[in-house]
Image (cartoon, rainbow, N blue to C red; front, top):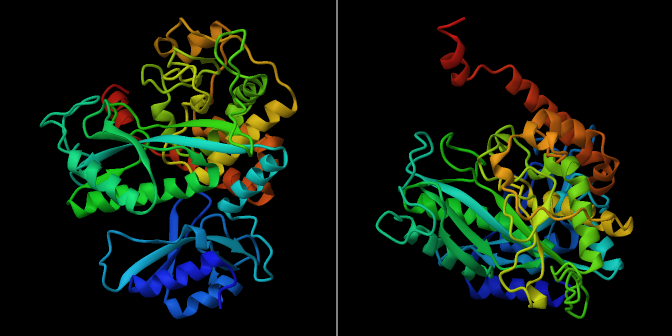
Length: 447
């Protein structure tokens, strides 16, 4: 029988809710959701011994002889899937992946985040995050025709996606994931649903659930949802701004200091943390922006910050200190604005936390804020003339900065670091050899 109260609760809920299948969820290294199902009679053994499966076809799992792995379900993540029938219902749990001998598997992204979170806890920190995920609704997966022609915050007949957002939010809340805001974004068919902040591990699980729910509800209505960073050339890209803060175990916000001489209500610890983000952002950009397409969003004029700068009122900086409630301790946080929703949230949150902790450990000095200048108007070349450093220009540049980063290797482990370098170099080389329609339109008739 199950050995703890949470596992007992899962087994009792399965009986009372007529659950006939339990899906085990986990991600590959690139953040794609993976799953297999078991019947409830196998669950007791799964809690105690895990469920074995062949990891050789999972991106980033196989390494030489390391094919056989075991999935151990996390009982605290159990939920019944609301979009499946209530009769013969389906439940789900996220899993930790281990080797056959029970040792943690180095290729498990969830384990990477757990390791850095535990490291922070030993220092007395609780890492809280609140992401803002953007995405597009299209009429189908092939035409890239937006579902509507609405714009920012529209509440008119243009915003035909309101019902989809409503159903998505209700579904998320049925799964225990609270939503803070939702609205139409700038682009036609572009949406944003923001999750209420919580600890990093719970939030990473929530982000993976969120992305699946968005797609499931869209498909239920006969449409298609995409988290591609830049799906349309002439429209804004989709980002995943990540609000983050460190609390102590008593619930005090360690980023807050009402006596901050600069007037930002930031503690010295918070400023060291921001300095760490700014110093190491070029090295972790491969993780937060992991695809060739990610860098189509990160160009001048697209309102996707790539400049190693920070401010409160200036939204063109890489890091912003939101000032909606400037004198509220719990609301004090910093916002990293470069990530996009195609990333693996477990690895992305781990890299952000690791960079911030390194800034605290080394007591890095924070540069002066950039409040008045609209950096979105400047090209990378113009920024560099002014001495403002930027994030990588392309996936090719990002992977080389990442490859040479000892901090990223320390945070992610040798297994995942090596895999990402090899996989993303391959992707970049494939892209470099691909001839695009833009090139044909530009050169074919004149060369």
